[in-house]
Length: 189
Image (cartoon, rainbow, N blue to C red; front, side, top):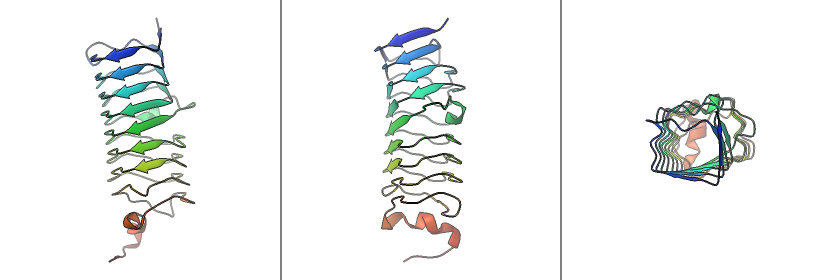
């Protein structure tokens, strides 16, 4: 049996031990909750906020995220590419997203603010008009990624091949231009 919850607050719950009931959660807040290694498959989260939560390694098969905000969350190793991609939309602030996968997703206008995105895979994704404000992109994979009009001015440690990605009207700073020139083996002093 699936549940429907709207406008509810969930605090200090450990869903790694007892599973969050499968169902639809609309305009709900999850604060200081643990979902690490849990199974969120098939769940629907619409206009929800997750604050100070740990969702690392959670299963997301056919999970729906619509207008979901993550703030100060640990989201390591998540396969966002397993989610239901219909109207998928996120906002990430001060999150740890290392080793997560966003392959082939349409994530236009997504905001990543003060996030660690080490070894994240964005291959084939549409990140046009997205913002990477104060983000660490060490080892992140960008291949056949649409970054048109994306803002990477304050991002660092990225390597993006201009010949393998769409970069028209993307924004970069003078300080991080080396991330676009790596394949040419040149030195800038």
